[in-house]
Every structure is written in structure tokens, then in C-alpha cells.
Image 1: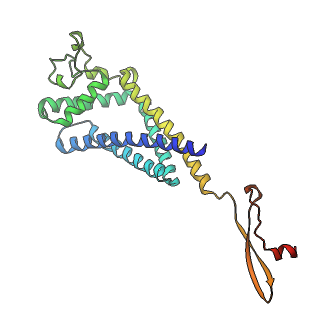
Image 2: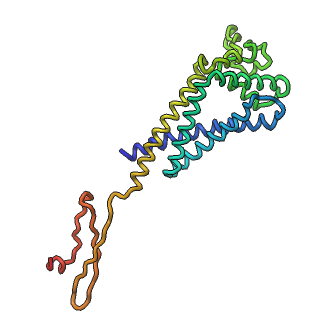
Image 3: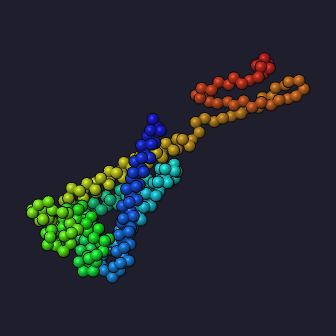
Length: 258
């Protein structure tokens, strides 16, 4: 039972770390790209936030891999602490959702502005806008697919009415309160995944501690048997009774003396 629990916990931790590694690398890459490519543009500190979040996610994933796959209890304990910090940070984001929404609008306006003015062919900016549009179910600043200059990064309309979408600034201004189902699913799903990973990490930590502690203590006692003129020492182990071990290796002459 303990072995099955350990395998399941390791699987959950591994999946979590793979997801966090991919997303962390994406955040870090986009943040570094925006900071290096457009140093004079004002992103409302969005690029620095992406870099910081990406680094924290990568550190968390690496620590979890070392602890889960390498059976390192100290790394698992550190991983649990990092998960608690991330969960507290996500809770703080929800509490301060009005400020977060305002920052998201500033960051989107920054991406929108640099794309239509200086980065029309930038694949990183285009990809970031596409992720925002598909996740938030919005399109550009006016919400008209085919009219907005960044319409090619918006979801493809399946009919005429689908060309009329919500402008992204109006969606982002209250995304933490009345956000699209996909965005809210990602937000709450990440919280549940972190909680599940935390519980699995604690269970695996307990399993590793139990495996490291000795189940019994082996003692030795020296018994000297006299055979002729030579003294022969023999070592006989004594184990705790719960192990079900019966000592039957005494020599016949010792049994006779007993």
C-alpha cells in the first residue's frame, strides 16, 4: 500500500513539475525578450513580473524533481514550502484583484501598442497576444475580427456574429471577478493542482522518513565455546521479537552445555 501511494505521489509531482517547467520557461522567455527587444517601452513592469514568476516556477519545478524523483527529503520539504508560498501569492492576487486587473490592462495595452507600431512581425509578441485572446475570448481594442489591426491573432470566427467579440481591455478590467470560463478554470485549476501536489509531497516526505528509520536494531553478543584447547568466539544476532526471526545456529556443544 505504501509503495502504491509513493508511486502515485511521484506521478502527481512529476506531472506538476513538467507543467510548471514549460509555463515557467515560457514566462521567463517572453519577459526577457520584451525587456531586451523593447527596453524603452513602458510595459507597466509586466516584463519584470514575467521574469520573476518564471524564475520562481522553474526553481519550484527543479526542487520538486530533485525531491520526488531523487527521494531527497530536504528537497521535498523545500518544495512544500515553495508550494505554500505560491498558494499564498495566488490568494493575495485574488484579494488584490482590482490592482491586478489594472496591471493586466496596462500590460495588454503595452503589447497591443508595440505590435501595431513597431513589432508587426514579432512572433513572440504575436504569440503572447494570441494566448491572451484565446484565453480571455476577446479580440484587440475594438473587438471586431477583421477590422482590428491584430485580428489575425484573435480566435477564428465560425460565423458572421462571431466576428463581434469583446474588446480585451473591457474583459481584463474585471478578469478576476467575472472572467471568461477558460481563464477562471486555469486560475482555480492551478490552485487545486498546487494543493494536490502539496498533499502528495507531504505524503511522500512521510514515506521517505519512515523508510529511513530502522525497523529493528541488530545487536551482537560474543559467545565463547571451548573445544579442546582452543577458544572459538561466535557472534549471534539478537533481533526484536516482532521480526519473527528464530535463532537456530547454536553449535551442538553449546546446546549441550545449556
